[in-house]
Amino acid sequence: GAVVSQHPSWVICKSGTSVKIECRSLDFQATTMFWYRQFPKQSLMLMATSNEGSKATYEQGVEKDKFLINHASLTLSTLTVTSAHPEDSSFYICSARPRTSGTDTQYFGPGTRLTVL
Amino acid sequence: DAKTTQPPSMDCAEGRAANLPCNHSTISGNEYVYWYRQIHSQGPQYIIHGLKNNETNEMASLIITEDRKSSTLILPHATLRDTAVYYCIVRASYDKVIFGPGTSLSVIP
Image (tube, rainbow over all chains, first blue to last red):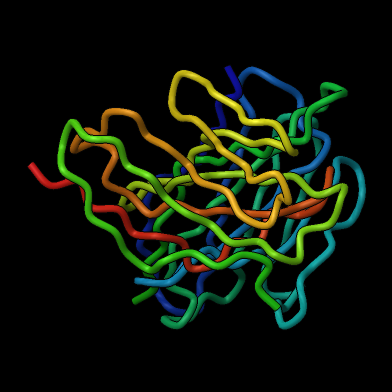
């Protein structure tokens, strides 16, 4: 149980284009989902927290107009990297927290590797 | 400020127990100790968590000192597949999961 998927697993795009990454909780409902970014040889950095049906909360230094987050249902959150540039190339990882009361363990997706040319 | 301190790297012989330490001297009474691991190019995997009692599951054991200022994650019989970065995280319920640099564990044949 507690499986989180991401799609696509990797994507290559041209500079200036937008890329959408999906995060799904497969066997549970998630009221809260989180988006992280990880550069090579570095730890995960939290970008934003999204709650179903409300606007995402972004961490300091993360541009909300560049990284659009939508959490329209209890099993799906999307991250759109708008006008991507080579410096946005990174490993993007989502996590989800089950709606079930009594647990707040976050479960992570497998990650999406974005390369911007 | 980092809430936890972990050694940057460790080696362990295959088949032996891997003991990964974590210091969290400023832990608050309502904060749990969580462990995750990340195998190269994958998302983090939840391992175990505890408040003050020792915990064991099918993956590992978590030993928390009585004063809760440190803990040890024990992988009883390390395999090559356990080579990963292990993250010790201290957080209260429903707080965000913030990752530090972790410990890079290499299991040696």
